Length: 406
Image (cartoon, rainbow, N blue to C red; front, side):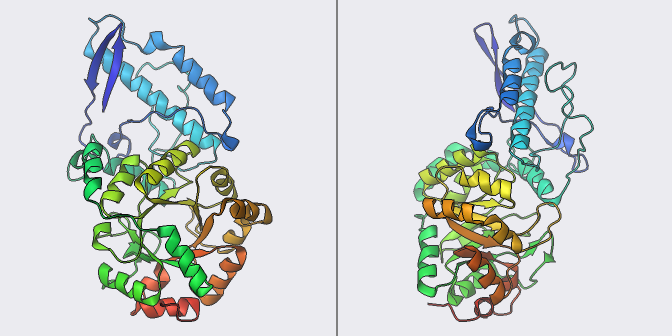
């Protein structure tokens, strides 16, 4: 981790290196690297209690600032650790105030001799993941870390400056939303985002004879408007990247926790990326949506419950919202979740903002498709029920009850 500490007008650059990472101990695998402002509450108002905590942090500069230039490097590193730890704790409070239950990384004890507004924050918090999504998110923080050991080192192998240069040679983006609208107008049925995936944490291996490019070609033949490609190797057994597919417009299905991942996806040919409201704060979603617009990408913002839906509908610039019918904690699926989230009030907001709603998870039959379409969706994202078919293109026909190919 790199940082700077002010020493009475002198800037001291410090590097805090990580130790060897042991998979059996989540705590030892993480270093706090990012700071987050204390804004973006529900209804986009400042939360007074959180800002009060932030003001306390500012008022304690004498405690965390290294004073004389002769002070040891250890003191400077300790001051930096305190500031980074406090920033991480503040971010967790912001997330909790917005109903986000997925913790970004394992809780850690306060730095040695720490006294301040968060000294009791991490006590009695389990330092093991509470559900599979939290486990995946914790691992993503490791996977993209700059202070990690091989064979990961994703950000070190491809630093942001290098990615920005690589954008010039990336294939041009295709109109992901336009493809969904065109499919809906052509068929009168929800536009299909067909997912290419070998496995999932809940189902295990879905298809043994998994040849991604052949499955993608079958999807296109069967009438898919867009493709979704899982790129996670550890939990979804991905063995391909977005560069392998240049057929329909392409969604890079990754668990994004860092803006770096968006740039990385674009350089690999993605036309859209997934942002999960159950993981990202309002401020992070707004920031990442702006990056997507700058890069010509579509952001599919996924929600799971009513609070997440209201948060996302209250943000500006949202064009595509996915309703995942899978419970984040239990992984159980209930397609009635789509109808519950699309009540009259929310549907009016969706119409006013011209948002396309995507139905996700639990869709296996024509009645399932009809159910979510009647609720208000104009696109569906389907993987398992298609990829396990011997002929995925025929699987699409079976899913919709008729041939939707061009």
